[in-house]
Length: 306
Image 1 (tube, helix red, strand yellow):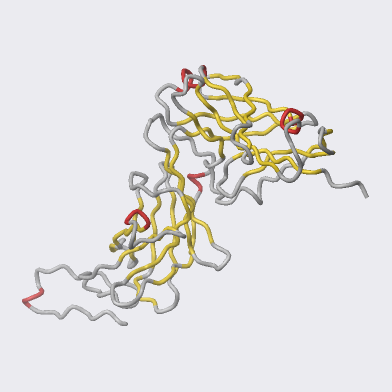
Image 2 (tube, rainbow, N blue to C red):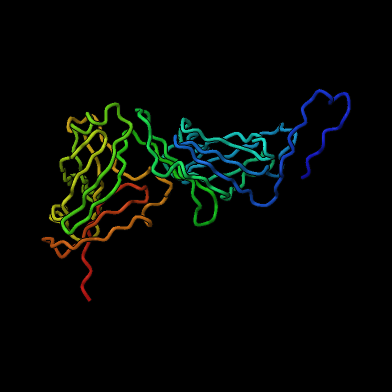
């Protein structure tokens, strides 16, 4: 579709000339820029069906994977597409717009056809690397764009308050030491002073291993011994999820690694399992990141030595 030029003449002498968009018929691509507050800006060429006069209702649509936008309005977020001044269209997802945790596929809706999946273009995610959120008690918004295995653009979203950000992990034959920082509480030092770290067995919620914290301001660390987790192991894979919990019952925070530009930590941050002599059978244990980038400890049977 070619934009129609504005006719010259008295009727148009005082009217601004509408911006001429770049119209594309191929699968649309969206460039993405992230900001340090958790917001995202998308720029793309105008889809077919866009009127160069600007009187149309195109939108970038985010649909939560596995959700139902008809039954649940929270499973769809529509972001208006407006001219960005460079002949392209722009949609903005501020950090203040709620985006529930999950995976969100990105579409462009030009109003005249079914919404089309967006392909990823250029991504500037530098502001997400080593992100340091400011003081606040509002939920921490994390949105990381990524390319799915099918090649389309999606977002991974988290909303956490409080949030315990995992940092360096120290590994040795006896266990793992976790270093991290606490975010989104009014007084992190006070919150941590009354808290412990817990490993919670996914197989049996009644099995909990609590250990003390070492703290300095909003920073914390704790050490989990593999032997203690393996004492309760009964064969097969066991996963222990890591939490911080206030001993007075006033709050808890999942330990996770969210504050960077890596949407899928599980295949990137890989740690070796350590051998453990467990009562049930020879075992091995070590940390890993779940599909949701939460930190956990896996206990499993030790492979036989060949």
